Image (cartoon, rainbow, N blue to C red; front, side):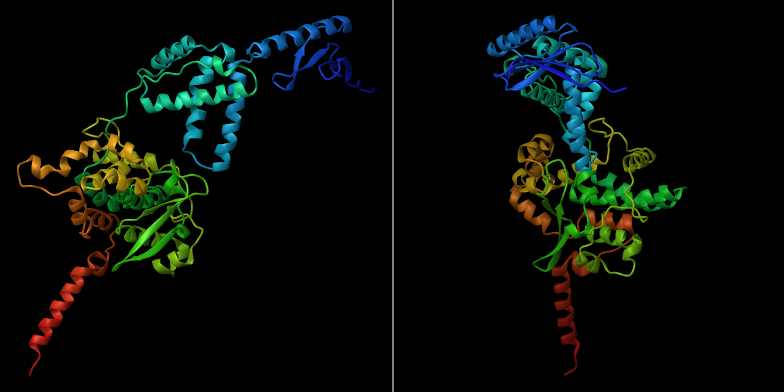
Length: 463
């Protein structure tokens, strides 16, 4: 039997038409409203052509009046609009291929908070009072007031939905509610002390060997490099390190010592196709050498050869070439084993991210200013000053303790940063079992020693 074709009746040229689909006897009104510049569709609910014409005329007229008065022409449920935004975010996340970042946070917020609460509201009926009810519902759901940062993420995700609703004519900009933020500003982040990092690095070799399963051993082997690397460089665990490849490292000649420089491709503050850079601590030579040693394809190469050949291979992979998704879980088990999970200062659980906070804390303690640090750690000077101001008294500890006049921040920075034999090199040696040559640790001292030996040798020579 031949299927019925779609029927169309023009009621007003270029303004109103009736359409009846092959699978229905009822007419659908299609009408155009110049104020929003697009065709709209709405059911008439009748198969009678005369009634359908009349209903279509009424719908068209009502839409024109609403549009002229600045009201939305079509009312949409929040859930329907949010799901469109959700799909767009999922496409962006899939293209970016990262498990971290704002888009992932917005997705989690839309699924876990916004749709469950606002889903059945018409998007143009969400008032400031309704938003206040949402804040109370959220507080009860979580059991506490979310932090200022978390609430900012929720508000940003909600604004994405409102942006789409305004763009499609489902609400007007004047109907957007005022979104408040009642969370407390974040304070000091959980980090580690120097002694704790030393204890962790000293424990790592035995911990790796104690793994019962081969995969667990490979994950721990990677962590034994990953942990001191983050603590030394302050790179963000996750995206910044996950996408770092051997070809992204360069060797620069700075004075008497070669310096490693990394081009960071992805991360919280790294824009696509605009990588940011960071100087790597000298201890990273040992950590990278450890990875080279257990990577089968680099077994017959030196570290310099690997760096010069610019391999498009991710650095922080296990010996089988894969990147695990259980680093955080294994790190937590390590901290539990060492009784270091909870930060004694903040009482919060420590994570891999706490290693980054340790690194930044050490830079602040050395006397570097927030302005000097911001490019290196990819965090604004304002945020550094906000979250690491607890270190400021230590920068003038001698003066506060009455031990002397002290030194300026710049002088302290210069003295400490010109002292090559620092803690991180020791930690890298503990975790890897490797040692950096003395000439790389302190070339001026080596030169001075050679000069002294030459002079002693000359003095001892027979006449």
